[in-house]
Amino acid sequence: MVVALAFLAGRFLYRIVEFLRHWYVRSTRIAWRFVKGLVRQIDYRFALIVTLKNLFQPLYGDYSFLGYMFGFIFRFGRVLIASTVYASIILASGALYLAWLAVPPALIIVMFRGYVLLK
Image 1: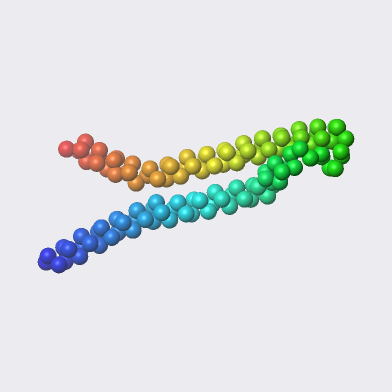
Image 2: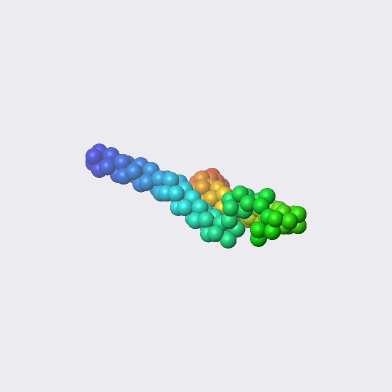
């Protein structure tokens, strides 16, 4: 009987550890890959690094004063828009991920509060 109880306790602890590993470690990897892939797809459109490297270059090879001026204005606007989009995606995904991490503790708290309220 004692061996069976020890086995069940060991399996219970094992399942708890596996759940926590699945919920926190594996989900972190999945979320990170998703956000990284999403930012890469969006970067295909915005090309932030390339735009930053060419920020002070003239637009379409027009080396006049207007070419330099418009090149800087348009590229700076593109950098602002891309930075805003990237920041909003990263902040939104971070907030969603923090909510995801808070689900198990929140359920435990709700479960114990409900148990205390029933007494």
